[in-house]
Amino acid sequence: MYSVSSFPQAIAHIDADAFFTSVEQALHPELKGKPVVTGKERGIVACASYEAKALGVKRPMQLFEARKICPRLICLPSDYETYSLFSKRLVAIVRRFTPAVEEYSIDEVFAELDGLRRIYRMGYPEIAWKIKETIQREIGITVSVGLSASKTLAKIASKENKPDGFTVLRARELQCFLAKTPLDRVCGFGPNSVMLLKKFGIHYVLGFIQKEESWARRFFGKIGVELWHELRGEKVYGLVLEEKTGCQTVSKTKTFTPPSGDKDFVKAQLIRNLESALIKLRRYKLQAGRLAVHVRTHDFKSWGVEADFDRSTSSTLHAVSLAAELFEKVFKSGVCYRLTGVVLSQLTEDRTVQYSLFDSLPKIRALRSLDRVIDGTHEFYGKHTLHLGTVLWLGKHRQHLNQRGDLPQRKTRLLRGETFRRRLNIPLWQIAV
DNA sequence: TCTGGGGTCCTAGGACCC
DNA sequence: TCTGGGGTCCTAGGACCC
Image (spheres, protein in one colour):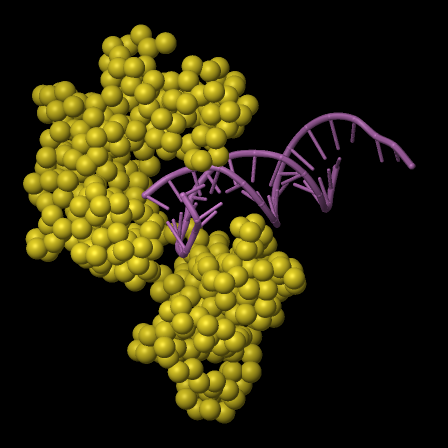
């Protein structure tokens, strides 16, 4: 099965160890050696330092739970902008060695090393080691590196000796190595695939690749075949070298406890998500052509529907009518829900406005100016200072939610009609949309 | 493992057409 | 009333990733 003694290609996977907390520790040396987590803003552990992990803190754990386990725990809010800067520096270092670099996520990079041996006068493992060492020296955080013939194998290898790991997976060692590699190490095998494989008596990766290719296709579809080849050291997935061009969707979902069957309340949750998603959309100067609305019931069943807007939009008041329409389709009375969410898709840049024959230009302009006011108010007074009236139904449960700390302690005043208009200083007809 | 939030991609099945 | 075969597009749902 593996006749070649070494792979013709070499792909390195570089994975930063506990990235967010490592950055914090690099920036604040007094945090080094201490149990640190980030995620304070959401109340769950987004990332735990190895010191915290050693004490049993895991991701995603509720913060109060984590504090129970470890009273000395240092909780920090996630500072994504700083982490992104570190991420860019890390990528830039790898690019010095080879132009074939994929930014897989904020803390992971793939690099193709083919053809570099002659330039650097060293083997692939030595080049990979040099990259690892340079990153650690220059930005002060450790990374784990895996080197093999395919992305999937390189990723398995980088996980092997975390943190600060360095694992080379050669063709001749593959069989031995995969005989001990559990299935969930494979990027692409989630809980469902693992469960199915175990039903066939397969518990390690070697068992999977010893099956026929047709078998992999039959039970695991396209991805199954791709992984089957990748795991045998046959490269299927190339590196995606293009820089990421913005996002393809913007979504916002939120779970609420306890679950509720109150239609107004559930709808208010949904509209609030819509507001948040649109704020984000406008911040990126995008507009959406399509909206999806989804809910999850108390017993974790999900439903969703989607539809196109009559024209691309980033306006809250414009979007809300379609959201309400879709909500009617998806909501069933007598059912308790625990989550609502929206997904905005078919995103385009905001200047390419498509006016239909029946759109009134002044009305569109009015909606835009209203959104500017809304965004400006949020910047000044904080998010969700201004709401659509529907959202006030949240107030029905406000007291209860406040006890749980789900809502900020803030007085809400209903601005309607004349007061609203005067506050915002916009002509009355603009509000009556 | 009793489950947070933001994403991407795949696929089965229905509608509709020839 | 039953009815072939094939194509495309769309929708809803699921699996998986970080």
